[in-house]
Image 1: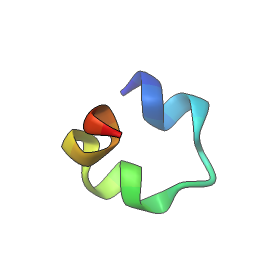
Image 2 (image 1 turned 135 degrees about the horizontal axis):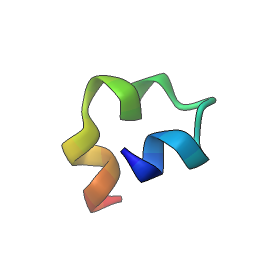
Image 3 (image 1 turned 180 degrees about the vertical axis):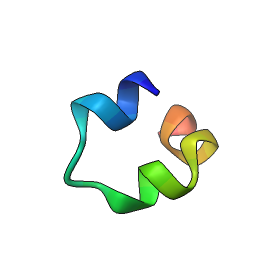
Length: 23
């Protein structure tokens, strides 16, 4: 959730929070 907040411009991170966490 933190990653998505920091990168609101990344729609993929919203769809896949897991991917964002790994990245």
